[in-house]
Image 1 (cartoon, rainbow, N blue to C red):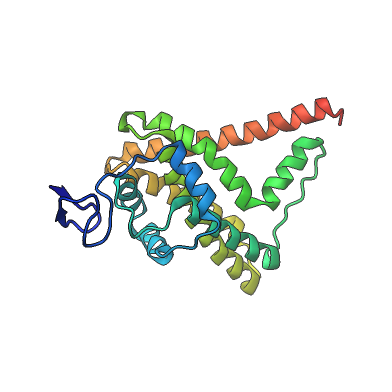
Image 2 (image 1 turned 45 degrees about the vertical axis):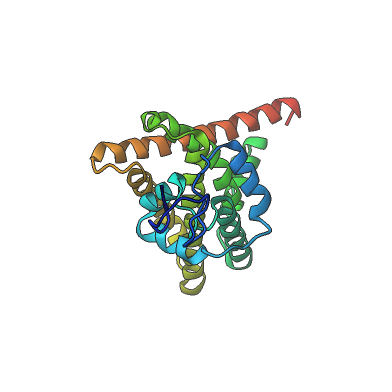
Length: 238
């Protein structure tokens, strides 16, 4: 006898007769992420607004349930990230006004830094690859693999971009600079809170570990950018 992870109905078949959830939930791995990447762009499935609501109110618990098998109501993580990135890119392109100019010319180091500033949504996605690794390091005893941590960060990064859209609109209408002064610190606080909630612990130490994982991931990302810039300077003799 199986118990549905989505609606709690009991059944003996391969799929729940009430909601259609499969009795066998495959663990999230590299193949799952590749499959979602292939289909996320083309299929705008139901559950987007539900996912946004869950990520705003109980992000860690919601994502943990998704990874454990309760996936019927949620929008797929890679598709969610792509859609949110497109929305942010569209709004930023038409009303965004913050393109900080790098003044010290260090060749490709500064060019890459400027690209990160001008393409915040894309650089956030690249940063996820580092954050997924550092979160795995700090919480290795929890047993989640790299791709499960990547799914966690896909949801959090996507929601962060949607919040960024709100601040873009506020800044455009009110002629303020909340995107720099409020939004960026807020995304760090939100990410740390959600990661701590994801690992289902109420101890303050888990949130400290989440913060350290975030800071280390960001440091590794920026270090890689600078090393790549230095390498390009040497190779191209900038």
